Amino acid sequence: MRRTVAFLGRVLATVVVIVAGAALVVGVLVPRVAGATPYAVLTGSMAPALPVGSLAVVRPREHIQVGDVITYQLRSGEPEVVTHRVVGLGVTTGGERRYTTKGDANPIADTLRVAPVQVRGVVWYHVPYLGYVAAWLGGQDRQWIAVAIAALLVAYAAWQVTQSVRERRQRAQKPAAVPGPGTDAGEPRPEEVEAT
Image (cartoon, rainbow, N blue to C red; front, top):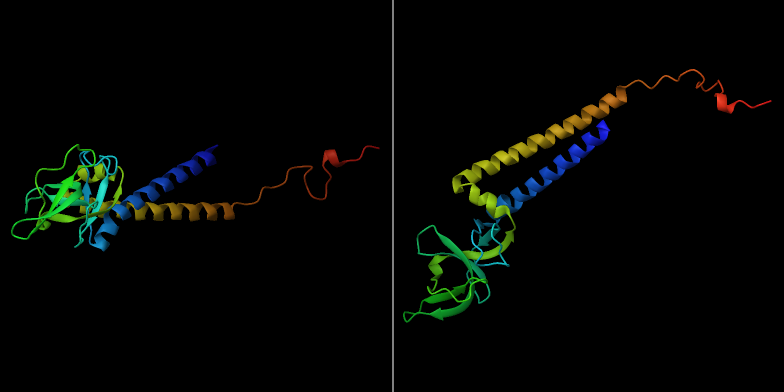
């Protein structure tokens, strides 16, 4: 029973390590390597395509078309962003391009048109629930905590490997069980004696 509980504990720990590692890879490592930026989805305006609590990974793209889901600043130069679908393209009288956007769950299009300078990028992929974690952590904190979690995961994996090797060595060094009376190879067991 003790071995079963230990085994189940290791399986559970391994699953947690794999899930946390995968979240770290898709939420931090892949965006960083690809030049993308992760954003937490905090409202239901894009449901069901982007549910509340998702982490939307956005990367820059030059050509934006109708149907693309973009993340853009509400006001140019300010940090607050919105992620909505492009439902129309237009041009100002001065020849500048503008995007008409709309949340999938909203009944009408957004009233303000989006200038290209406001666009942070097009949604590349999203990860459900990971946005809750990103929203809980601040922008600066997120980086340090991701590094700390990665270090803890590596340390935990190393500890698990060390424990496994130690247990195997202990089993290999354990003396073989000494046979009891009547179980010696040369001495027949009671059930093996022929009745005469």
